[in-house]
Length: 232
Image 1 (cartoon, helix red, strand yellow):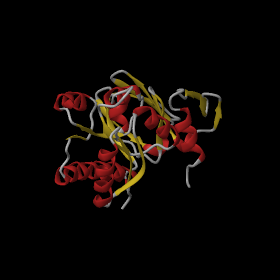
Image 2 (cartoon, rainbow, N blue to C red):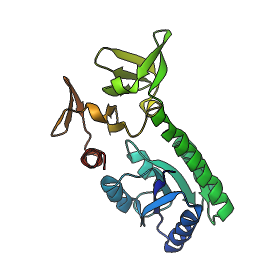
Image 3 (cartoon, rainbow, N blue to C red):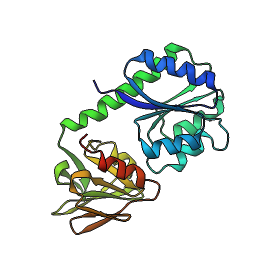
Image 4 (cartoon, one colour):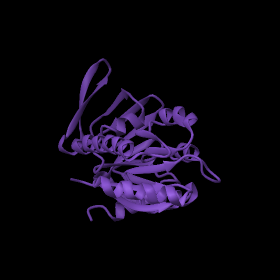
């Protein structure tokens, strides 16, 4: 069973300690780090992307909500907070769960199993090599190994293969949920690329055959780290 990599972020040491104990008891998390504010968390994520954040909302300088909204491709999140009024923000940001402090262990485990179910389902896409999308009134089969990159345009995405371009109604974020995560990565708020189709990198540009795909400044370290460590 693949462990879920995670980071705990909370400005209260006691809260971090309590969550650390819960995470270890659950048995299916890989706790990579703990930090006390969003600024420290941002630096950690640039060096080491993770699957899941246990994230406090009320923190100095930048709230958890503001931090997640600032990321072009955030990890999944379980919010932890003492304030009920932030529940709507959590819903809007598509977080996995919203834990109200003080957090009982059984309530934590309910959120933990929700995260496990989510990542189990997502990782199972690695055993599927295609999907069907609706395009121009018909269902088009997209074989993952043929995809070069995907471009998001508000409520539509363009899927590029060597032979064709398929346009389907979807947000880039929703489309990304259907892709095998080990084969694709987001390089820009509007682009997802197939890792094995990248032929070269020049500055902030990825070359994929005759195509050029941008790397955003916010994702540059994350992208380079993933490419350098791919296959390890």
